[in-house]
Length: 116
Image (cartoon, rainbow, N blue to C red; front, side):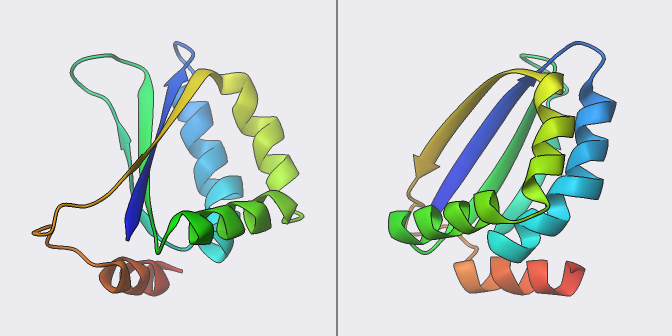
């Protein structure tokens, strides 16, 4: 398993607009195509106006295949049109879990399945 961390620096005052676009337009597409959502988070202390989300994948190849399917989804363009004006910068990290990480990819996918 690998975990992708995406961090968006959102324009001041635009967090509610960005989160609404994610919830209503982005998540339906992302849950269908990416599948391994760990969570979305908004900074409260430290650098403000950041949204961080975490996704689990089997491998870099799995990530590439799923991201390609997401980008090709008919609903993705509407999400991008609503979300992109809200943020200033994006950063992506791909991380390997430590051997003692208590959550598995199967648990993450099961959690996402119950929410869909």
